[in-house]
Image (cartoon, rainbow, N blue to C red; front, side, top):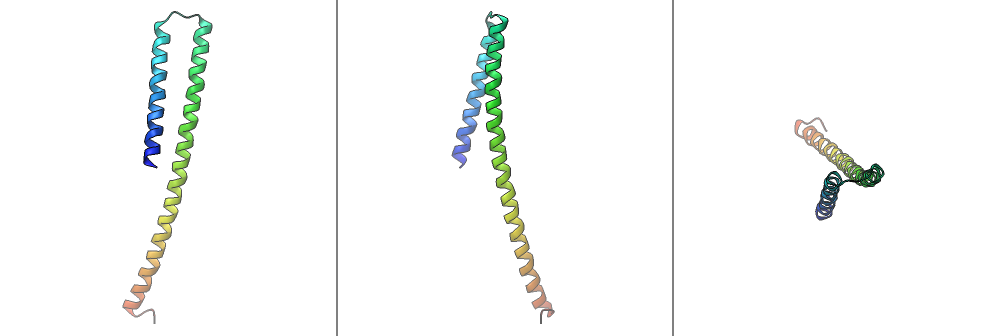
Length: 95
């Protein structure tokens, strides 16, 4: 799972570097207004795709943390119940 996340992170980093190079080239060239607008529209479309991918990853992580929190709360509840039973037995209140 970690390797898949690292691969996704590298992919996102690579895409961001590509965007940065493209923006730098756009700044350095003489283009018409229409060409600049089209180029930036493509960049913004690709940024939207990246944002959606990042939001999907965040949602999956959030769901995983919610499940882990629920499991942890269930374990704590189970431990508390066992502790109560042991304490009742030790103090003689469970008889």
